[in-house]
Image (cartoon, rainbow, N blue to C red; front, side):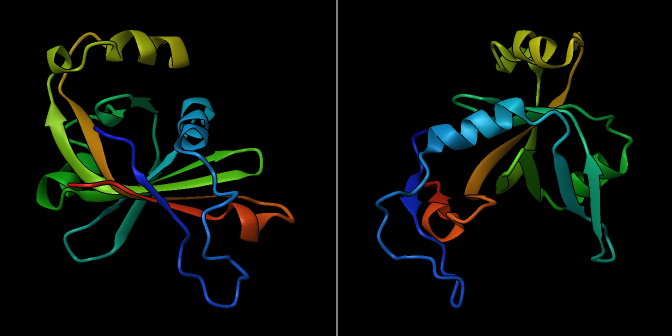
Length: 158
């Protein structure tokens, strides 16, 4: 996975500038994902209603957002039917939204995941499968007087 393209979001009326000077670096987003303990995952139910639930997840370089949930959970059932989802991560006044496509992956295909997950949550996963969200778009900003200068969108090439 390559570094995403850094842009400004189109937000008429919010004072967001078009130039990327002062935009947040992707490393900022990775830091937010690394620190956020209970990000929220939004999926879509069969009837179109949203389903939002906190979940444990980590950013794994080269792969994306990796998370574990029972294959019988509402989240998994929704993702098996419609693989697109959204994560929301928060750290103090930092906010990050990551959109992408999810797929099931075996633990053996994710070197470093088990140790990183255990380090963050003090919980060792010993069996898969797990889910990987490959990001397509992300949006981040700091919730302060610098919102217009920090609002950043990242686009991932397919």
